[in-house]
Amino acid sequence: MENYRPISITSLVGKTLERFIRYEMVKFLEDEKVIPNCQHGFRAKRSCVTLLTGTINDWTATLDEKSGDHIHAAFLDWSKAFDKVNHARLVSKLEHYRIKGRLLKWLENFLTGRTQFVQYRGARSEPTEVSSGVIQGSVLGPLLFNVFVSDLPDALNKCTLVQYADDATIYKKISCQEDADEFQEELNNVDIWCANNGMELNSRKCKVMDISRARLPLHFEYTLGDAPLEYEDSQRLLGVHIARDLRWRVHTDIMRAKAAQRLSFAARNLRGCTPRVKRIAYLTMVKPVMTFGLPAWHPTTQENINKLSRVQNRAMHFAFGKILPEPRLQNVMPFNMHLRHTDLVFFQRCQSGQTDFDARARIIQGRALRGDNTAHPRLQPPPARTAFGRSAFSYRVCKPWNDLPPSLKDCDASKFPSLCEQFLWCNF
Image (cartoon, rainbow, N blue to C red):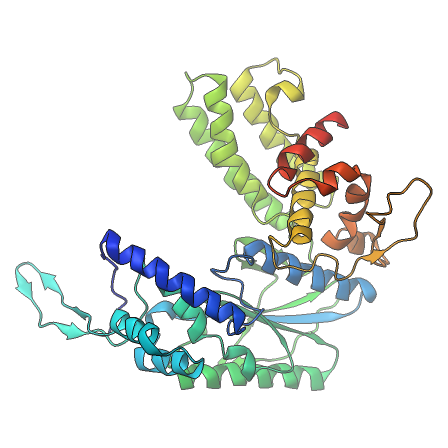
């Protein structure tokens, strides 16, 4: 049998030691900037939301400048990526990044010396040494995988790469055959990197998408290894379904159906419970499905907002009966208000340094108006030619942020979400 990733069954003492080693490693790797900025997985200040918001914001700004532009994005899928990590190769990379001494020895002991066997109906195979794979369920496993793939960006210099753990996406603005050739060259570089590092791409799950608002698609033939890449009109990236025109109808419909299914499950099983229990069930089981990934994506149109609002209204009727109390007494933010609250909280986290994402990259400081607070200059949204461009996060967050009182902008980061909610209720 081939080597397979073992399961971590270490004791509480072992887990504590792993956390201590991970803390020291993270501090060293961040100081030395070993993990590239394009990697968002298993990092304190980077997450799915930072990756999606930055990527979609970039695509929206590009297509807004010229509606006929095309962006080709390749969504790469490694086959059992965490299981393919070669221990010897990983240790050599740790040495390359100047991890040495006792820490390196601890990591070598953590990876090596493990065996596995198969037992079936009383028959048992001989133990075999596990020479690849990071430990499943361990504290150090995800961090070691990030170190293993940290040199992948060095193989690419003509495309933009974004990563979340073993999910990788490369994209490039395409306008002619020469651009397509460069994109193909980068795909070849990824294939070479995989061959050199013992990783294997699942060509059947690797897809390419022509992201554009043009009427006619611009398709070039791309290959990965010997397999041609198929074009998709919609692709799922970290739980968000991205359509080729960056409209959110497909994603809204999928999330609405999934949320409605969960709400039906809760209604069948919590019929005799109190309104408080039913409200908590909605907030923990149903609403996160509809709002996952905000503010990276946005329902944009009133039609999409209404679809999600109807699910919430149905949940409130389930909790409180036919006659609903006032929205404030329901203790659940209306969906429009929730969208604004999510944007403001994420922007404030970026401002306070809790998230390593430059939310002001495209926002400029506007001209001071009479009555403005000098400590908080008015934000001016970036140029946008169309309503499509005005739906981007960097554009739509400016006005709500300018409307906040200075005291709220200056408050402690931990108190901002609750105080912002109170402010929005007062102005709802």
